[in-house]
Amino acid sequence: MNPVDKRRREFLGSAAGFAGAMIAPGVFLYDYANAGVSDGASRPRSPAEPASASVRWGMLIDTTKCASGCRECVDACNRENGLPGTTRSTDSQWIRKVDLKDLRTGKALSVPVMCQHCAEPPCVDVCPTGASFKRADGIVLVDRHTCIGCRYCMMACPYKARSFVHEPTTGQKPDVPRGKGCVESCTLCVHKVDRGGTPSCVEACSAAGHGAIVFGDLNDPQSEIAKRIREVATAQLRADLRTDNGVRYQGIPG
Amino acid sequence: MKAGFVRGALVAALLLAGSAAGPAALAAGPTLDPARSGPCVEDPKVMRRSHMDFLKHDRDDTVRRGIRGVKHSLSACVDCHASKADGRVLGSDRHFCQGCHAFAAVKLDCFDCHASTARTAPAATAAASVPGAAR
Image 1: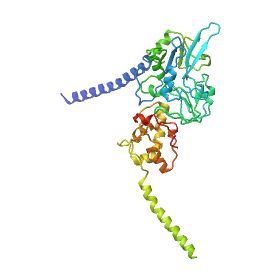
Image 2 (image 1 turned 90 degrees about the vertical axis):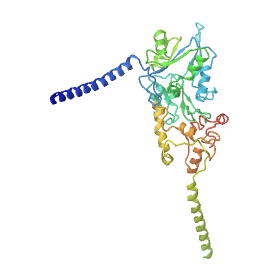
Image 3 (image 1 turned 45 degrees about the vertical axis):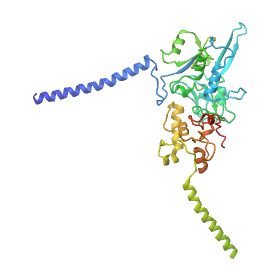
Image 4 (image 1 turned 180 degrees about the vertical axis):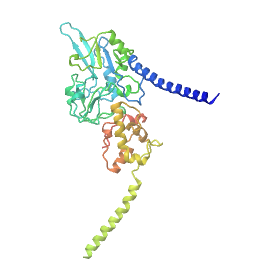
């Protein structure tokens, strides 16, 4: 091989390598962006990663399967989150069972109502300290480190979803700190969801054989909740307020 | 005059005695119940001075961004430092958090909200966990 050929070969070799490097990241980025659009966020998140805005957690509650008088979801919520479970007017309630009856038709409903995890949460709009916030994945939470207990969010919430802790707390769970002087509400069991789990109310409802609550990613077209929402008529509570709730109900008038 | 001198000498002797006992007690530090052994996430000297800053930084990562298993997590502190006897970091001046905070005379309000019991606590004492009861 003469010296000219050798230089030529080296040049071609390095050019090919460079072209490969250019294509590889391009292909990777294309695939990644495409995956985000077509598959939603089917890839489970590692607990060490921050919550992603490509996910929107939500629940679908089938009121036709929800039994009147059944409190499995409420009790499971109390156990999981270390709530006392007492029902004086000033006690914390993260889920309330609401019984409704249409007086003209006699049609009765029993529905669990909790924080609706709005896309446009009024509680976040009014919070003077920024303690009430919406996470990237749509879960609406209270940062108790910043909450001053003014209860403005409780007044702003159209669903009466929030409670104020009036008395010193005992028996907190390691994953669910809660204390006197702060507002609190359903967290969608964020400590479990971050580790790939499901909220306790959903598990309890399934374990009791009702299966009335489906939890999942509303942004993932392949998820069970997204499929159900596509197939059956569902409604958001007080949709006229345009808060775009993450919790939807099947079998209630829209 | 003489009485004044005697009184002054007494005060001086007391001051000397006090100053002799002070550094010794300070050097000894609080007496704490044995907890799970093993290295801390940072050097103990660094932790003594800066643990509150580490906790404050990482709590926002967890609460706001949803990052679990951060390096400086309060529940991890409790899991490691809880007393072997009852699995708690509060309860008496021999418990890790309360003992040191009492020694340093610094108010400790983490456990107004956070659980002060280790996840791996003995079952009998876990049920008796009453955060805030120590105050």
